[in-house]
Length: 431
Image (cartoon, rainbow, N blue to C red; front, side, top):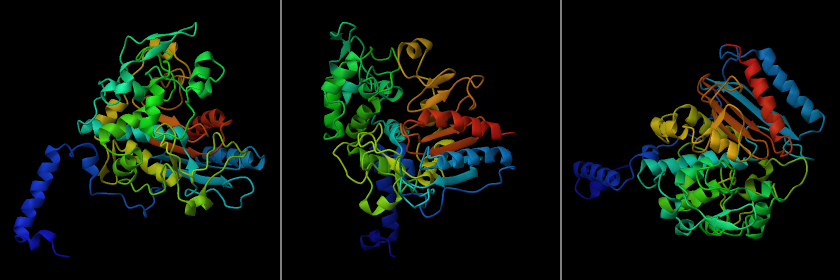
């Protein structure tokens, strides 16, 4: 096919114009970050799951079989309809298997193509999108959130007597990414006075756009001064609105252009087409307030928990992280950008002042929990990870060059499987 510029002044001039366009693009800030992946995508038809020999990868097959038998037993006992576990090292997969069926009364077995609501595993994806904007100079981690969302210029902090006082510290963009913003999730502390205030203020609405939702959140009281306490929260939902303003597009488009598109993650989206419904995983017990119908879009693209994905798709994102921001020749973020995301944003005082912190020997960076002491945690020091409220989970362990993805749809057993996964994985990792 001829170069279209040949019709103007010939092939040589065409190449000069293309070069000029690239220079102009860089000058306008389209270079680093998403620009590094521009025009290049990972083939979605080539599976991200590259099998490897478990023994060669340092795993004891007999101990990996403990995981297999444990999940089979949980399915047989009716604890879960199904699950999917994937364990890997050095870029290859040592263990991957689906268990049970996609949902109660279904006949379809769980596979690496089953679509799960990954809930808060959306947060790392959106955080990476934000960092591509940081690389481009469109977003400043140390800027007040009010630079992008003016309504956050006047914030108030909840007091023990139910009154509020004006915040003395600005909320910074990095506070949103590290859950040190002062915001909360009211629905996980619904009987507390501040939780009730958040509920009355509309925290649980889904009929607003990300930008509209941020305006609503800005009116709700903070639990703490920004930067002083870690509270798991709606911070990433507000980050989604910041990203839309900085990126000049809606969140779904930015996620697709900057992460899922280049990585070939064709089954990862805020809402799925009806044609994919036969691949949806469903929970053991119906709970519409949590397990929404992900084929029925709402106006709210929740950056904190709105994506659904498959194991095969999400592994692409995990392998990009394990590859220091690059997967199969497609770079999403620079190594130094990912290193910044893996810096602990918390202190002992910040961790102790808040609620729901991941645990001992842990820190929290820009979108990930961090293992800071593997004498009290099973994953190696430097491991970064996150999970979703329905029990989905991933981690990347650079110390052992290892990774894991786990998928279920069971809110009640989420924490139980986190403990099991660590035992299964690290008991089997013998060299």
